Image (cartoon, rainbow, N blue to C red; front, side):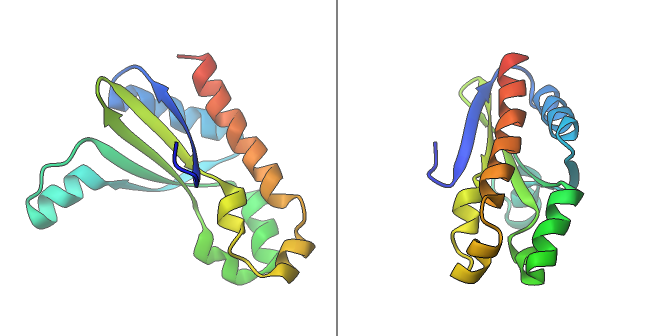
Amino acid sequence: MPPYGMTIKMEGSFDDVKARVVEALKAQGFGVLTEIDVKQTLKNKIGVDFKPYQILGACNPRLSHRALTADDWIGLLLPCNVVLKQENGYIEVGIQDPEVMFSVVDEELKKSMSGFPLEVKHILSLVLEALQNNT
């Protein structure tokens, strides 16, 4: 597991796992704003073959509004990235760790939003937990 993310391994086809991830995010108030198909992009742009790999830009409007109200430059850290990548017969799902992401903001903002990164991490952990329990 990377030190800046939370990950699980899932069985199933890439598309099936992606659909389950999107539904689990939705159940916690997140929508997917962007989808980047890294495999297809690398093939189209530089002719490189790469494993199935997608980056989903997930957003929870209520949480995003709270963060943006505290500091509108926090948008540089949004949306919350979710990665799906194929590895040796399974799909790895990773979500960026909000505590690590939030560690780059200044001390004043950290104080004013005390507890916020942990709250978001808890909600995202529920997404992974739901996926793990439904595999």
